[in-house]
Length: 311
Image 1 (cartoon, rainbow, N blue to C red):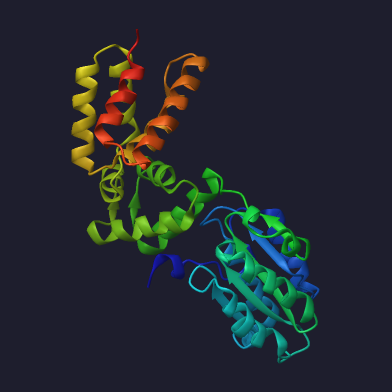
Image 2: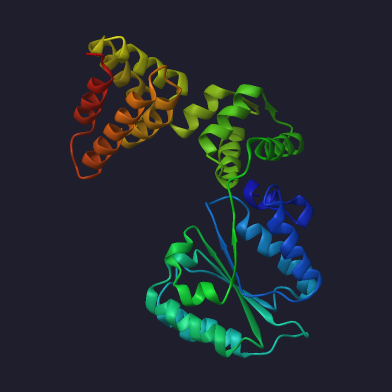
């Protein structure tokens, strides 16, 4: 079984972070009065897990008959709202509580589909409630947002992610040292789903999880390697910095965009004045745009490195 499913929270108490949001949803469930909801926030922070826990608590053993879960990124046209969603919403639930329609990745719905959904939410409010899950609330039209109670999820704190990593390590009998744990948090960027997938990939290779194993599997350079390259350039040795960058890119199989993002993160850890850091961040943005537009990756990275060389 995938770790993402095996360790999905089963109770409200299992959900890490989002304490205030969990308390409010729990209160709604206890009162058996779930509003139309909009969960907005980055990926892998517990949006889907929370609504599934709430659904099981609310409907008990009959939760599957009373819920419709759709991934809007697969079916995002107006027909899905006019047919599947409308047909589900118009029928009465098996109990006294209105049914629940969960639309994952709702920000992928077209504007026409969202307009149709707005009317459906209004017409069938007595028989069905809606929960929309989105990464970007700005992509949900205002009329839908005004019909929902909006909860904004934040990335999990480092300590909360460590608790999840420790739980997986304990149950799967893994050995994860402190550096490996920090590396998981670094590459996961607050996305617990991503961290659990990385862990599962590591387990196939070795149950002793190390920092090197993690960076090798995710094809990312170690932060210390990027810092080393930038420091060499800052000291004025452009040729050596260029050679070291090429070596790291070939060893890890990195693309130009991967390197740009890591350089952007590590600039803030350099021993430079803030004004100089801002200038370099600006150059990162320009170089990334050029690569996205189709310019030669290594040529653009060389151009970026040249900006680090002290004049």
